[in-house]
Image (cartoon, rainbow, N blue to C red; front, top):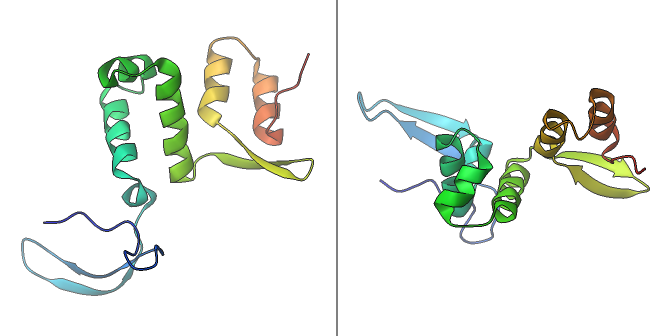
Length: 130
């Protein structure tokens, strides 16, 4: 059995399933079925996510297992969030940027910011200087 294609091999467009078949009873269902966001991840991102989940979200452990630096593991994590569409877009001075919610929560947990600062960052997409 082959993995589901992530993009059209001809034009690179988004794909959807039109038929599903039960391996047990062989029932077939016709229609238009969308793929969830995980089905669209690159193979590298999927492998990273598997290691991340198996290690309960411990990026230090992920970095150790994958033999990469912690900043590289963090960058991979941010890339997976971006591919999944989980980074929140915000507007600031006409330019679009993204807030990594996991980073904000980590800063809050580490005591680097307080609850109100975390809330403001998530609302505005920027950290107050000073």
